[in-house]
Structure formats: structure tokens, C-alpha cells
Length: 232
Image (cartoon, rainbow, N blue to C red; front, side, top):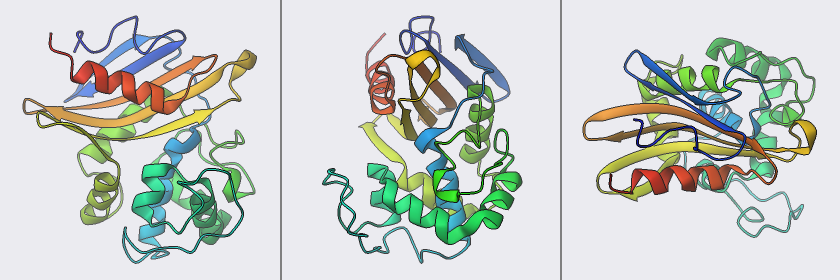
């Protein structure tokens, strides 16, 4: 694993935690510090939406609200699958509102997610600081999800992971979710990428967080993909 994760990855202000089997490895800084999950929390919302039958399946379309964001990949009818692929805010705000505060709070507690949720507006939960999580806590959740041991039916968990799949190459299977925020400490941004990858018969759960000026989740993901596809 040292060829993928080291003190230089994912860059300034960054750190990564990995789990293979029962072995936890730490690389970088800030790994026990809780911060906002940003859009990585949409993994939780997807599970709760399917459990509550707010959506019939990953490809059921929801009508666009009409409130334009200026991002054409968001400003259209979306399914759970395409909403996860594009990280569409309006879609998951609708999910959160339909769940309501009580179901959201209970779902977060059931999963054992970070600090738990202490807020009032479900549609702001993943950005407003009312729920926080550290990279170490995050990777342990991703390991459990990879193993299919979240407190949901296995088929439901597999559906969400298929929606989170990211194409790398024929030798690597990768799923995960990015998250970004410009509201980190000291004017720094947050860039998350959490999930798991499999190669050569071994599965590695990971949580990567970069806390630096200009950090964004998709950039962190691309740095991981680059390392996964670089021969050593």
C-alpha cells in the first residue's frame, strides 16, 4: 500500500486512512479531526431514501424542481443513480426534506455516523456543521459498507455501491463518493473521497481528506485513480 499512499498524498494538508482486513494504515495529518462530510453524506441519504421507499429503484426519475443552479448536469430530471454520479444538490435536498428530521436523525444513529446529527434542517445537514466525521471514522464505515454490514438489506447496499462505481481499468474495481466545501478552517477548502477499491484479489477501504486552499473532492479522486493506474 505504500506505493499508493505516502506523506505526499493527496497533497498539501492531506491525509488518508486505509483498511485491509483488520489492518488500519494512516498517511498524513488530521486523521482524527472531525469536519463536515460535505457530499460524501449522500451515501447515507441514498440508503435512507431506498429504505424509506422514497424512490422505487436507482433509475426512477425525479422531476427537476426548476430552480436553476447553472450546472447543466444538475438542472434536469435525475434518478438516484445520476444524482449520485453528478452529486446533485437539489435532488438530495429533496431526499432529506422528504425523510424529515426524525428519520434522518434515527438513520444517522443507526449507521453510527460520526458525531450524530444535531441540526434542525435536514437539507443542510452535510454542510452546516451539525454533523461531522473524521477520516478514521469514515474509513471504518466504508469498510463495513464494502463488507455489506451496514444495517440495511444487502441488496440495498449493493445497489448504492453500484451507483457509486467509478471506471478505472480492467484490473481495478472502484466505488466511492466525493465531497467538497469552501468552508474549512482558516480559509482552506475541504476535498473528500471515500469508498473502496479492489485489485489483485484484495479490497481496500479508504477515506481521503485534503484540507487546503482550492481542495475539491473530484481532484482527490483523480489523484487516487492516477496512482491506481500507474505501474510501480
